Image (cartoon, rainbow, N blue to C red; front, side, top):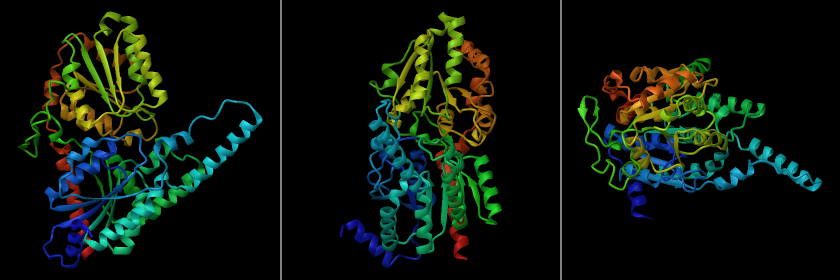
Length: 482
């Protein structure tokens, strides 16, 4: 038995009455997995200790995911215990090949093989409800059971997607009697409509609707990332006659990720000394003369963050004022679906400059943001978008650069207008977006910029938002002890 396991076992046998409280955080997506959704559990693990809660993280040993980011591991305190369990999922590239385009060959044998393969894929997808990550559940449940037997815990917190992870938390609650908190990084119903490879058939919708109702009956509290999503969950709970807390905890920004001093909760934060760009960093190497206006977008481009409205505005501006548009440099950092890549490539037919990069480490993303003159936030005008707030919004606020928000009316628009009232446009307002670009490319000074960027953003810090989570953990555990 290892020293760590032996120590945990001894703690479980003779835990002092005043021992620190401990939460089991179940997160399928966790470093070295990369991506926007990973930041939330990582920052919780980082800041919960400062709020009186120790953390054990249960995650995957061999995650089937598209991107990795080893740099995020640096955010984890040394005393955070991370337990990894293997999943039986195939590699992500294998999963993608299974949902790839069908062969265009017309031979009879080829068509038969294609039909059989298509049928097999549909059967597998229908069987793996609510998502393929359910193949992680057996090993994850065994690992979590061992952890809870070794060491006392006070609560279970599960963050999703993957929504199948909620079932791990529900099984552990039943077995150990611990309170269960479900964190919806995205609404389950909306994810079923827009996530890549989501199961959109009527049978899956029916099954997952019943699954979600069953899980909500077992939860002791629920958390969402927007006020609107929280209200939507509260309605579901009311229908089930479940008087449990439904709390909004935004994703927020981590001041320590940025190379400037930020005030949080009325006090100055000391940021990392290495957070400013180095001489060889991309923000220094690729810096442009002041005659350029660099507009930076970071994050995935997919059907919920359609870049088409911005590209239309650039095309319009290039057609009417080609010399002015030469001053625009559009930088896009992150994964792109093939459809969005095709839209983005249209910039190369204009007089603007395009720099497109795939996913890179979060520290490099911050350096790109530091090099920007303005940042762009995208949200498609689709049903349910009024309840979505992209996580990047808060980092954009923290970087304190001008922000162009292309989003329908809703919670994202409301938050963006609070800080940059003149930079919000609905997706079909091509003329308005082009006018905003024209003013920036013309060097027009905006008096509202300095005023808006000085507004307090304290409430959106990761530390402040984690404190809200700690308060919820305190409340739920105290209620369950009564």
